[in-house]
Each structure stands twice: as C-alpha cells, then as structure tokens.
Image: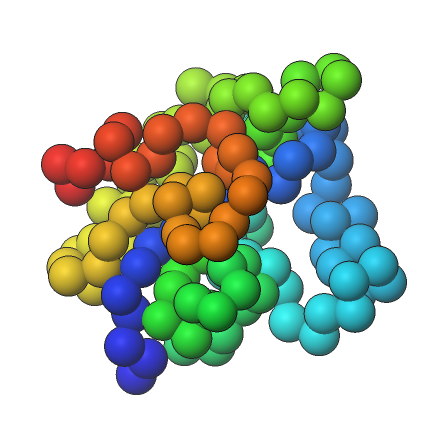
Length: 136
C-alpha cells in the first residue's frame, strides 16, 4: 500500500466538451507519459472515469506523485483558455463524494489543489480546493 499524504484536485484546463480519450492521447503523444495524469477524471455530467488504480502512481504533481491520489474534473478554463471554475453541479457533487471516499481510505491525507504544491505556477484547479474541502 502506498503512503498517501495528499489528495490533489486538478482541472484538465480544457473545454468541458473534451473527451477522456483525447486527454489521454495528449499525455501519450505530447508529454510522452506512459501513466495517466490522474487516477480519476470527472466528466461534465458527473460520471467518473477511473483511469488508474490508486495503488499505482499517476503523473499529476511533479515530485509528489508517489504519495498522491490525483483527481481532476474536465474543464477549468473559459473560452479564451483563462483559468475559470467551470465545474457543473454534477461535477461538484461527484468530486465531493469522491473526496469523501478517499478521505475515508486515507484519513491523514491533505486535500489541496495542484496550485497549492510547492513550485507550481498554475491556477489548477481554478478554484481554492484547499479551502473548499478543509472540513472533510
């Protein structure tokens, strides 16, 4: 069992119409990743795409992946690719439920946004996840 210290919340920094398949293709073809960026992606309708078993290491936060569960929602930017919280009500509900499940499995894990890790110069997940989920 991995020693999980963090549950990182991400956005895909894409339109909400982006598909999981296209996101995965980008990781493979443009970033050269063999493993997914996230363990879970939440689609606009709230459906979860489970991309990787939580016992395996994903590519979500450089330098922290071995101790992190990475969860993302599709979206996070406006029509001009500026950071914006674009979560649908369904995504918000699913994300909350999934974070609760992960906190039950890993009660000591800290929930925070990608942007809250050291040396990250991104707005990801385009909202203050650390504050929003501080009481979980």
